[in-house]
Length: 272
Length: 289
Image (cartoon, chains in turn yellow, purple):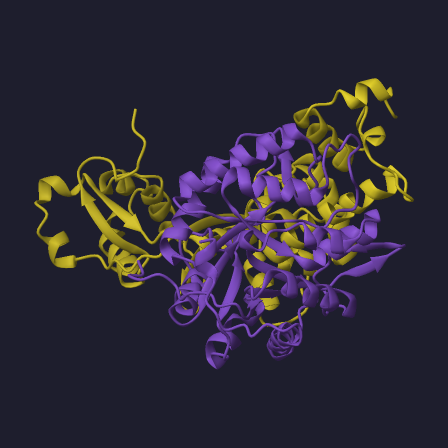
């Protein structure tokens, strides 16, 4: 709805830009149209070009980040979802990478209890893959000799460092097989209800996914949460704590645990 | 961290290097002096993209071209965006760094588009201050690019080209002159593209962009999805006659062609510059870098 010309002409730069954004995403603006020079094409059509561009850019960014979700939904439904999501959670940054961060949560809210609920797990997995792709590099290899030299009474305070690209995921649907099928260029089918524990990480040849046993994810989650070795042992089920040595050897050998620090919080960790 | 700056950028044609072509580019090592990449695509903390750029910069001049800083926005400049840009500039040591004369967000909501500025003194002052702040933060001058536009705001106090030149003079930055954008905006708003070109002082221009556009319902859209049109080639020849030899980039971002086709388009840009009477062999990036 056009505002009075006087109001429109008084718009400052900030108001103009606020109204532009509101008009593009929500078709809500008071004085913007009368601020646009028609010049052979009305303001609505000119603004519609920017709306189309904005939608397209956002949707393409999501399609690039969530290719499996796109394959599951089909292009038309995905584009519709992208616009609904964009209006609910507009891009928070000039770097398009960030637009997908809230999509898994958005899908979880909107698909809970429906036949498509599995799609939120697909999105969670794909966002984990995206985070692995951009994580810092690390060539650290845990020094086992140095680790063995830590006095027994100090070992409980050790904190282990994981490769920065490592992500841990628990899903309610069997999305691992679905993701693998997509990687192999095979058709994707709705994922069955199936609790899965997954590890996602970046290797030289690309992102790798692997299923984890309950024991492994319990221990790795405790470490990733910043827990000490002692706290990670406490996270293991009673009777399984003697598995610690095997866990440590397994995940050091796999390059998932890359370093350790003795005592105190790790560098960069927030303490209170 | 690389020990030396990326190679200088001569007044010849380069290409926008996109991830689709990364592997083939590194395998073929085409005979090309320089490439441009979108800065934000390399804001990651690590990973394959950065490794590719590290490899490319060893043999090619590199230009970092930003699309998301929202220089003309009324929101504060995003400190995290700036920090990542500076980190990338320090890593790549590019011959050129550029951004757009536009805005992209309000109240923290980003449209991730290159949105038009009102051509007013208030907007000019605002932009000049922000460009100066960015240059100070990066510790180097940048180029600012004119964008294609599909609307103009009422109450303009100057032409787009006066706005651009004033911005460069006040902020002490250079101009990345997008000839396709001039053509698109001239057609969309009915001003003579020649007037625009003739108003741009040669000493301010550090780079030219060329790209394809698409006509939709009587308006031209800067899609970067097609070859450069004959009309834009003609305008480019005129630009080169007026400005002298300038590093020229072929941008192609959607419906990407083969790398071969992209390189052929760059060769054509060099041929067009020669037709216009310029032998583009002089390294001129220093005049604005």
